[in-house]
Image 1: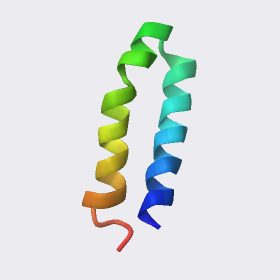
Image 2: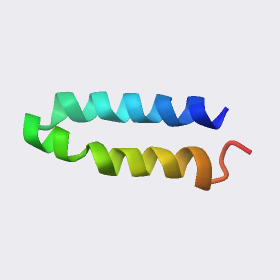
Image 3: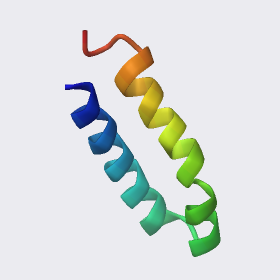
Image 4: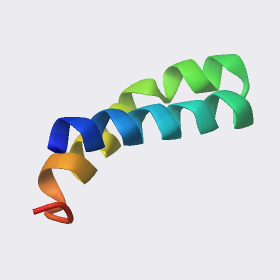
Length: 48
């Protein structure tokens, strides 16, 4: 379940960043989006 939540949040937030931010900002925000998605899926405890 956590893997699915991780990829879902990573994809959704990444697509929002791609459409809202300029190209280089969207590319630079990939690592923080990954960290945020990891935290939501594994560390937040929302899906336990």
